[in-house]
Image (cartoon, rainbow, N blue to C red; front, side, top):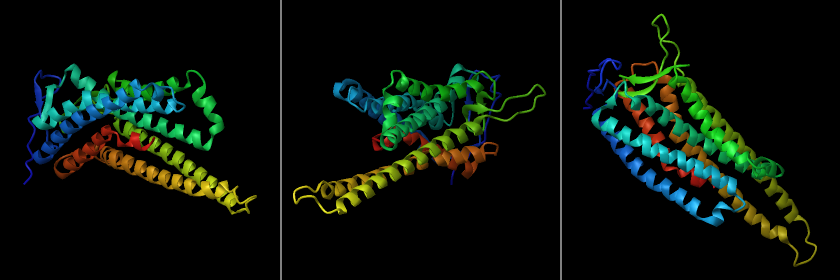
Length: 327
């Protein structure tokens, strides 16, 4: 049977020692989470460092025509590397010991949720920027020079990808909306509701962050790839109509050669798009639903196990199969 332990949770503001866990998840799931976090920290660090070194040291790659795409991939890899280095080791300690490893009122308790949500959101927005880059290149190639070749445009887009997540996390960090602190239910430091002057809890920005952080990027990816597939299919139909015309000479039939290649490109694009949608949904949708539905619930037992398993799926995005699929 699963072993659920009751908390000996101290007041986070009054203790200087590591805080014991609450009623959250089974010990078996904690072992799975700790093992997964360790595995992802090691593999993700190696993979993303390799990616950054390969892109940074390869001069032809840096200066090729698709340089904006390379910049977005490097942003993606950097965010994932920070996630693997700064977040995953603490996750492994947290679940391995079934307690928050530092004092609940320490600086680490304030910085951990900033690093967690900031790096994940930056990674997602970098993926969106990469998708928009493909959309403009394929659907509106005439815009590409203005959007990506104008000096400063790509750095501006990268700055937005990093500024939005950490700008949102500044709200609870400085207690403008919500606050950062220890949650005894999950033995973790996270985004908590604000405390009003009358002592009552106000709305937490956590649900808003998760809805916006998943819904808007997902809609952007869906719209962009829908337009890309539509454009490729129109090009394919045009090539088929051209190929169906009587050739001018027996040796002049370019359409008959181009059509199969175009068909192969469409099939490859469709498979890539399906993989991106599937991976994005698999990694982020379960945790988004869990945080929205279980935020105000007494997350314990099987519900806590589901929440942790959904978190593990999100962690696996840091190994970044999505970035390679999007190229």
